[in-house]
Length: 133
Image (cartoon, rainbow, N blue to C red; front, side, top):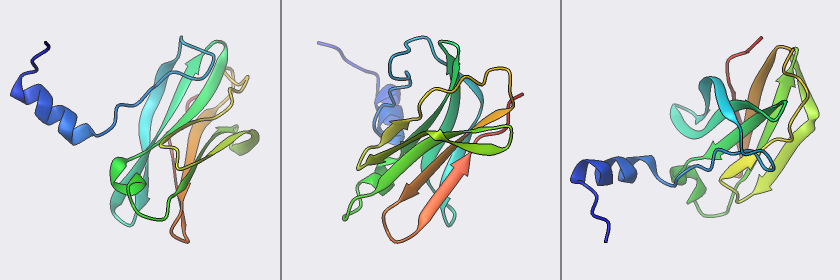
């Protein structure tokens, strides 16, 4: 039986659901740049991260438990922004899905950022990471 110290349990309680940070079909991804946030007013409702791996860039959106647990459901998306333009071919949407990965883009030599959206209460909330060149 595994016994976790009280400190570890309290950290787990604060972070909510564990995030699976591996792009689909690519086990060799690493985060690049800082984490961006999607806010509803001043409340953070999702995280947005950019990853590189398998020769591509990936966007990742994770909807926080506090928003995901609201009645009525929600939708979320992840997409890459390449040289200042949103790459709609990379966009992936999820319905009641807390973690969404974009499609990988062949953009490692370009300026990129990850972009994420969350909607479900009649409004669209968005956030993005810093740009990486």
